[in-house]
Image 1 (cartoon, rainbow, N blue to C red):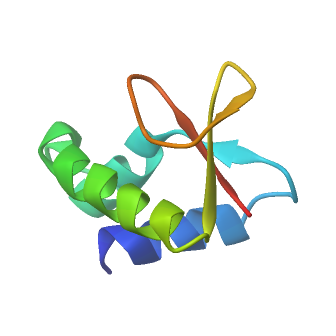
Image 2: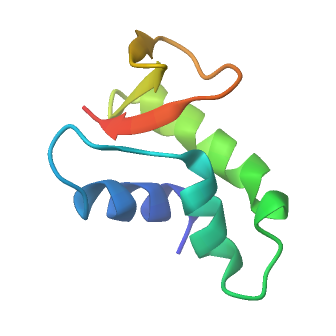
Length: 77
């Protein structure tokens, strides 16, 4: 799966309005023995693309943000 597919699958498995941490997607991409930190760049890129396409909502400490910056959470739109 691609990073974008993993993000969307995680969101689909959560309750409406729930958020995910980007590291959750990276951990799934890396697998049980993988280096999830190495997957973060792909997750960030996929997050940016999906957010720009209007498919995601980004937030930090419960406040919606327009762009990914610093720590953030991901929700479906």
